[in-house]
Length: 192
Ligand code: AP5
Ligand code: MG
Image 1 (cartoon, helix red, strand yellow):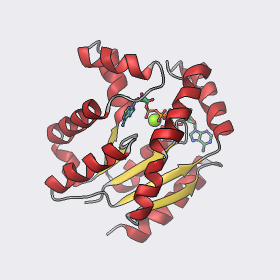
Image 2 (image 1 turned 90 degrees about the vertical axis):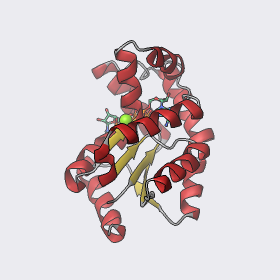
Image 3 (image 1 turned 60 degrees about the horizontal axis):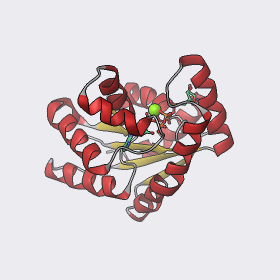
């Protein structure tokens, strides 16, 4: 069993690399962004609340996000075999809650892969995706707020996981395949 956090700014490639990592390591993928977009698409009450934050580029409040994640772990027994957490944790509070949730399940975060990409490239990637796929939060105003939120609320997690000896920084520019190979090299050094 191996729990991996894939960490990085909006557009850094968390989703793209998660797809390859699932195939390689057979892990259960939890993308909190995808979970929230699914709730919005289904028009649930929770989805309406989530939309009021996502559409402005802000984070869903910790308490709500943590309870959504706990429900996901409880309702998907396959998560006990190992998870890629994509987009969670995003605050120190969420990281502490994840630690407790996994400890209650006799587990832990084994490694954190941080995809490091310059803001200018992130903006370029997200604007392009907004034009191609129309993801609602991929417009310049919301992208700028997502980046601001990342730098103020989420990036401190890097030091948190460095202190735990779990952080593996990866240069996140270049080809998807080269980035994947760098991640794999880092993971294979620590994976049991
Ligand atoms: P979320 O869905 O997690 O969005 P995000 O963090 O903004 O990141 P993205 O999904 O946009 O990017 P990514 O890193 O997955 O990159 P991708 O592979 O897609 O969260 C959305 C919102 O939900 C948040 O803003 C917040 O409101 C809420 N939320 C989610 N989790 C939360 C939490 N824990 N707490 C509170 N709120 C939460 O790639 C991006 C683009 O770049 C794609 O078009 C891709 O094809 C392209 N690309 C990928 N790799 C490369 C490469 N190497 N070179 C060139 N292009 C590339
Ligand atoms: Mg994503």
